[in-house]
Image (cartoon, rainbow, N blue to C red; front, side, top):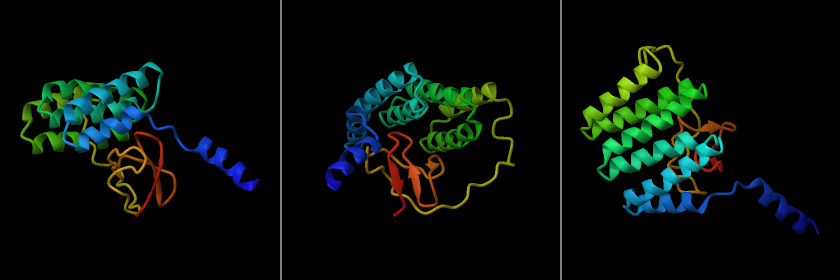
Amino acid sequence: MRRRMGRPLRRMLAPAIPPLLRRSNELLSAGNPTEAARGLEQLARAAEARGGRRAPTFYIHAGSALVLAGRPAEAVDLFERGLGLLAARGRSHKVSVVANRLLAELLDRGLTAESKHITDYLNNLAPGFGSDASDPLPQRKAPLPTHCPGCGAPVRPDEVEWLDDITAECAFCGSPVRAE
């Protein structure tokens, strides 16, 4: 009887991972960023419509997929949407961390015009963006896997919500990700 009770409880606690999220991450890993971006943008719009907290993450991930697909102008629109949602929710530190990563990735790919566009957008959104060097450095935590075991999305230790010293929450599906 004990066994029967545990299974429903585990099912209730495990996050429901949308099949479209898994499929989009599989497509991205398989080298099909255009189709992956389409699925991620669909997830973002659905999450935004219901006020879901993962909408900004989906928009930004879809934008990154479009950069890989060679469509950076479309990616900029998705980056702005995601960063704008984060800012509207008062997540200024996360905006800063994510924006700095995006800007570095754009510059690494030689996309200076897109990088400047994002920087200008951020300066309009939050005047003085990037000029505050007083942000505390995040505490060093245990190393996480590079991808979520639940949905396959990338795991970035500086962008996840840490549940404890060795467990973080996947920014995409909410699954707990334990340190390696």
